[in-house]
Image (cartoon, rainbow, N blue to C red; front, side, top):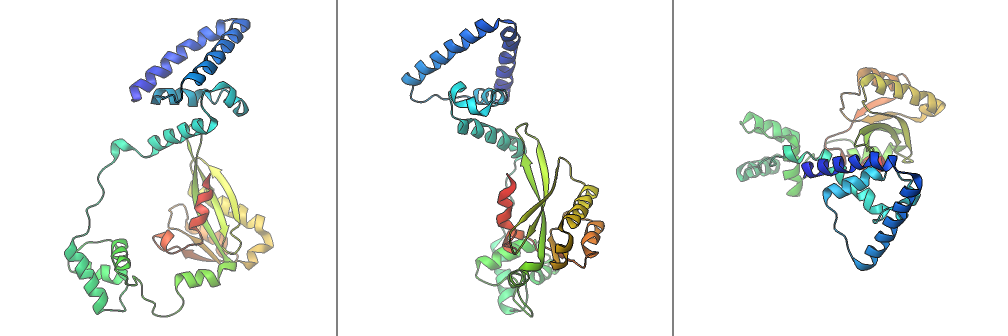
Length: 285
């Protein structure tokens, strides 16, 4: 399929110089003839099947035609053209040539051992059970233990003292600001990264900046810009919630700690522990 796409692109690009050298009257007449031919074909054919090379060529040509004229120029709807671009992005970032089978499932004997340890030791959480399994010679990730206990209806992290993580986020929402990176894919198949800050109580999103290659220094500067933009509103903030990304350095934390804002590291996995941040990820486009 990649060879057919390249062949189609080269074949169509060769026709471009000939189209440029023709007179304007001849080109306009040819365009009118092609439009009439398309209109006749649309009346006779119920559905046209396009090959991957055809979709790629239409997606390339769509950048040369204003969007408001797509319906008059192309035989497909603008939604179809955008769908072609989404398929190109999916093929680029899923890496099908490097795809491998997933991890093997956990052995039933280990699952039974995990459930037995949880029932006989009601105060043990999933991390304590994972540590005991490691001592017995069973290397297993804490997240796997969490999933096994959760599927069996056992609390993976039994409450010992103080509020739960969800209760803490709910009661302290007015003073929590969350930081996260989102990615944006352009029409040229390039990936941009946006740093956003989310206020938990209002769900208001502050766009700090967009860059192609985020670095630690860039992230620190965006944090400084945010504190200057918020001004006196920084006094109402008590915590900054972030993940364990390497771009969040000690200097990044110091920007907020200078305003007496504590740093909280989000538990892993985030979607199971922080329901306030996950819905905001959907705004990336």
